[in-house]
Length: 436
Image (cartoon, rainbow, N blue to C red; front, top):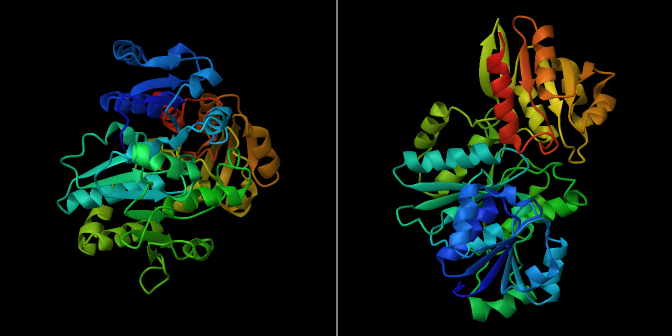
């Protein structure tokens, strides 16, 4: 894709927007960023760099004139693809790409893309570790916190790109027969986002504050496979009821994991997905099994923080869905004092009713969703609303007995009280480490 001299407007700052601006500038394009937040949304270092490189920053808004003065518009994951800036660009006949699709234009290595409602970060990390253990080099990026745009020009020594990708990043992937794709193909040499291996781990309720319903959310996930062909692979969960529907429209070679075959029933589905990816890449199962044995887990996912007076404190801040909270409860075999809540994603928490009644000793609800959580669980478990995370931790510490577990598993987004789930997890760990 040739963007030299092109005006590339990036809608949305944060990590992705800043990485995109650096990429556009390095390729000779004229980068512009439109950010809803104040100028302080950008670190001082980036603002100084932007000034030196003549990167224009529009803060406190998205103005129509700023967006329309563009040859290409690139949308950060946090910006809805039906937002006014996207509509203005479409009305103006300007090509609009999502962050991942734009960055992938400059990626010359095979992409292994992993999506799903739960488990993306764990599986992405395991696939990277497996590739490295097999003697190859891999770049791990995407929704895991490091935008693809920050890596695509530095892949000379890399064999594979392992990309965690969310529905927010996928909803902007263009159909290969899109009129915008056809119109821009000759001038800009646009190619579709085409992962060599595309993994769909599972599908359940999530992000219903962003997508109007489960079907729209599912169709966003399905865009992972839009541009694949018969040289590519789709790795699907055989036990997920939506996968049979998904396979009907996939043009690539479909491979199933978690098939229920002898020896698989007691296995972690995440491990089974990694094994199938390894087999596609020609990596021995023994190499994968060694990686599983040595894996310490990812930060903020069932992360053991501390044992104090016989009480375990577990950080599961990355659990932002009901199913992720269920996974945490199923994984622990001790009485649980559960801290949950945050910004509601229009999730039905009642799917946890049975396991909460069985395993949760006491529940502490925080954030914007605390009243909804109370209404769901107050008849099943002793429940207390707390105004802050620290208050919840202190109350749980006071009520816990030796052998109990204090679990932060929010089942909600973090943006009502924290910058992101990582910030929430770090705050939890700091509070726990200060306990005496």
